[in-house]
Length: 243
Image (tube, rainbow, N blue to C red):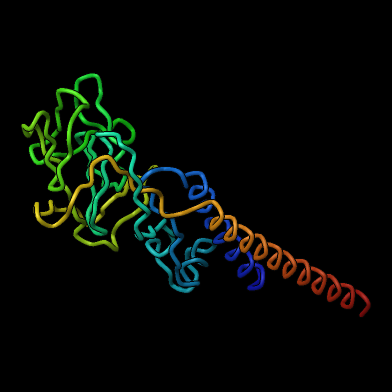
């Protein structure tokens, strides 16, 4: 494979990854707390290693290209629903768990399951200061410090978390975020919880469509490069045949 073909293929592969991220972003533009997915950059030698693992001395660890997150906050809107919550701090998150793994999220679209446990996306349990949050009903009030009260009595408290390393945050399913470097609970005074509100996605369909058009032009340009090189290569063969 010639260098021209390798360069064009690397460009098309990276454009295809960005197209997948754009599709996910556009589909999740209305998902509360969703963080825009961004394909991370990587050295060309690492991209080339995807075609030839021995190329340029690249190692297998250089080859993957993972989705990073645009961590800018989304707008917060009032819903009037008592179990909806938003975090009033850009670097803090809610936590959801299945008992074996814990994810961070900015989506506070919570509800009660049949056992009266507060759950979020995918039926995952919301993490409170004392573990799972059990509520006697949805007619509750959420205080700024995360306390959930009913008829003036505190029945549970939502725990906020911060990642040990924001750069380690990776996109998971939906609004869920994986923290590869781990998480730690925030102090009560570090963040505020706003009851009856939701944080929106930080992307929109219009922005993603602009990105899609840019990728389409990139595909077109790379296709022309390959076609031009094919034509040049064909003419060279014809000239050699005449000798």
